[in-house]
Image (cartoon, rainbow, N blue to C red; front, side, top):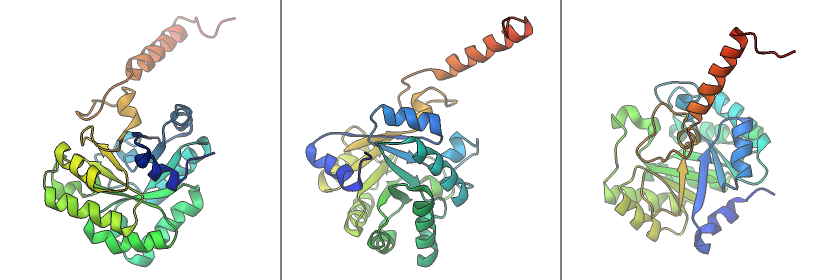
Length: 255
């Protein structure tokens, strides 16, 4: 039976670290779930990882729904969270509610991730009141990369703490800290009652999330905050080359 949002939030109180990975298709989502990962994020990172785009901005609501439907069909145990694509929670209240509800209704996911700040506090509270669990995301916000200018460590302690406390007060069940300076992430994790899920934010967060392709060695390069646990690039390349050679030499198919 799939993990519920309250059970996910309660993991922090039990003192156990939380594991999260991204997934975008059926076979990898099935494997991630079988591995016992607590939660799967169908991230708008699919724009870069799956579609080969420069950033996450072009990803559409329909694409998020399509990939989340696929992942949800594969998962039996993990919490499945879908990203709200750009411009996320910056649209009007009716449109944001309509988009979040559409994702929830058409994918059967367990919640929505939103890139947020203290400015979305009221929006988060209204969505939660409508029955839509929200995983907040603060720190480096990929949907604002054009404004940020580059992917860099976030070190403004007071602003980050303000954002973290605001999304907790609004009712978020957890918060992703992306590229937050580790000492600040540690302080935020100690201050909040809800879990903090780090990516590039040090070891003191309540959990960690990484892009699946990064840990499998399928990305062109491994980000500094990630760890490569396998080298599927070489394995898949070798298999494809062996197949090509067999076909050319008429060794496949065999009699």
